[in-house]
Image (cartoon, rainbow, N blue to C red; front, side):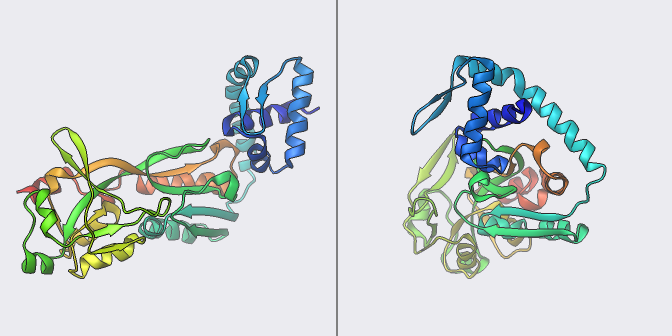
Amino acid sequence: MNEVRAISIFVRAATLGSLRRAAIDQGISPQAASHAVMQLEKSLGVRLFHRTTRKLSLTEEGQRLLQNVEPALAMLTSAIADAKSAKEDIAGPLRISAPKALGRALWPPVLAFGALYPDVELDVRFDDHFTDLVEERADVGLRGGSAPAGGAIARRLVPIQLIVCASPAYIERHGAPRTVDDLASHRCTGYRRANTGKQAPWEFMIGDEIVYREIAAALCTNDIDAEADAVLAGLAIGQLGSFSAVTHIREGRLVPLLTRHLTQRESIYIYYRHRTEQPLRVRTFIDFMIERLADNGDFFLSSAELRAFAK
């Protein structure tokens, strides 16, 4: 038995909560993964997992083994990856997943990476549903909202501000709301979430609390870019993510409203499986995106800008 290989499978199964997902992650069959863990248990003389048809959980001995071997395995994997990278070229397929609107907002740095490393074959999937990297065999995901769970490593890139805004033409025709309650007398857009099919409430910071309001939408869509287009066309007021709105605001096509009630509880994340287990092209892309995007002011309004708009 290759004990290092078996321990690697054990660690991934414990992290992902599934032998089947660990097998996909390791590029082997579920039967091979199960056999490796069973052989490891036989060699150690202890049971590492409680197994049911629906759940895989660690025994006390399994938890102790995980705590002891995970740091050492990470160091070993990192050392092997460093040795390989001395000869490895930045080339080959790179599979990326991102929601449609966010993906388009982050498209320029992805294209810049492609231009810098022409031997990397970019395979980009735009999908508003959350992508499980293991199940979808993706290398890297970009996601807005809360940090992804499920065994992925997530790095925060930039905050997402939810900005109520309207076009100058809309404000000229209908005026601007002065309070959150004033929105009830205005035409507003709505966004229908891909995962639930329900219209997302608007959210506001009122005092020290985040308050959610159901908005009667004059136009509702499941595409963030289409919603932004409706706001730009002067059809209605919208609450847009800063990654969609900030350029239009700075260039005068949109006017931010009710900025004292703006919320900033979510962020854009890049997420991936264990970095040390990735090919050089994947690690290079992760580093490139973090360098280009981490707290990049092109994607959100600064405190000074918010103060100016609040006057």
